[in-house]
Length: 218
Ligand code: URA
Picture (cartoon, rainbow, N blue to C red):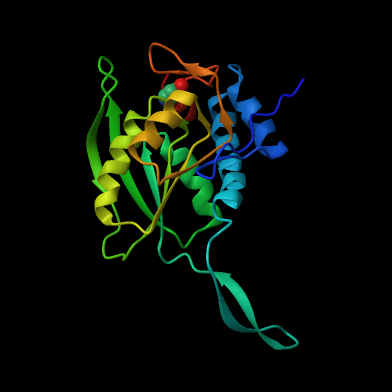
C-alpha cells in the first residue's frame, strides 16, 4: 500500500514528502501526543519544511577569509524575505522557520473564524514597512476552509509583494481550491493533502485544532 501523500500536483502546489517530515507528522496526528511533544515536533517539522520552501532563495557572494585563503562564498540574500504568521497557530511554524532563516523579517496577522459563518475576522495586523516588493512566506499549520488564508492574502497583497508562498502542515482539496481560486499566483507548500473538510471546518483525518494542541488550550 502506498502510504505517502500524493506528490506535487502542479507547479503551484508542493507536497513535501520527505520521510522525516512524514514521520513527524504522523506523531503529531496521534491524539495521545502531549502538547509539549506536539510543539517540539512542529518546530522540527517547520525547520525541515523551511529547507524546501527556501530552495529558490537568491544567493550573493561574500568575500571571506578562511584560516588558509580568501574566497568569494555564497550567502543567502534574505533581506526581502518576510515570514508572516497567521495568529495564533502560525507562530508554531514561524519559530521553526525563523531558527533556520534568522535574518528574515516577521509580520503577524490576527484573524479568527466566526464559529457560525466560518468567515475570517481581522483583529491584528503588523507588518514590516518600507520593503520594496517583499517575498512573503505566509505560515499557518492548517489550510482548511481557506477563508482565513484568503482574507490574509487579500490584505497582504496591498504590500505589492514580489512573491508569496503559503506554508502549511496539512491541507485538503477544499482549502487548496479556495486559496487557488482567489490567489492562483500563490504557491502552496504542505506536508500532506488530507481527505476532506468536516461540516465544522476541520480537516479529516487531520490532527484536531492546531492552536489548542500547540498551546494546551483544549
Ligand atoms: N484549524 C485547525 O486547527 N484544525 C483544522 O482541522 C482546521 C482548522
